[in-house]
Length: 287
Image (tube, rainbow, N blue to C red; front, side, top):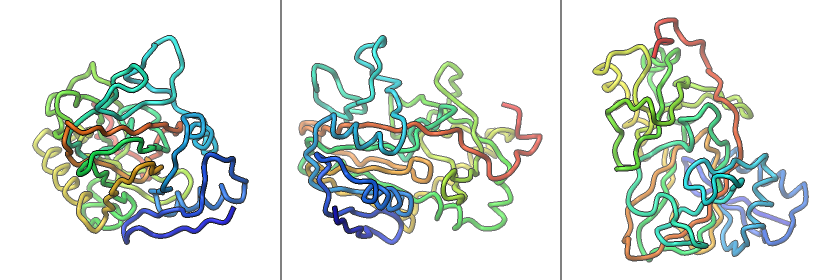
């Protein structure tokens, strides 16, 4: 199967052309795809009108599937498919149905965030709902040496506590919400590159700093990470299959008309615990 990889922006993103994922792909083709995903962080495969089984089969080529941890239809059954939808799909209400959503990293509030997220666009609004991605390699590289020194040995507290409003970080520390402490700067387990591991929606505070210090530093980092030089904005087309490396990108969503359907089928692949690029300083170990 001959394929072509086309760059989508200077920051990140590529399109793979010449694929039909209703069919099994050979090992050589998959190797090309996987390397393109690692190199470009976001990979788009257009026109993939595939079944749920097709999507699951393709996702399994990247690793073990991650079970759905929220919005499960049956808590006693394993579930690997989640619909990001503002409509009822297969008898169930979708997750994250409407509106804008701040930049974040999937499941960064767990010990082992997912490594890959994959969406298939089944139904789309006429306008809006674009997905934005930022390159965390470039965000780290673009920091001043002084700022790198300030954060290299720090830890961050991430939490999932945005059900009420996914456009703002909750200022309240909710210890009952899913949360985990991770390094601010991590090393990608496959490429070896350093990434800045913070995000506006879920990073609550920097461990070991007082609230004012933490808020000021995080605000500066969020603004730095989200600048256009590091960004690719995906304009969805029907049956796009889009997959990204959750270990090196953040993503966000633009608003759209809630009267129009937006249905994307989501599958994710298990990841590993992020590894610190630098040893945390002793004063950063307290909560």
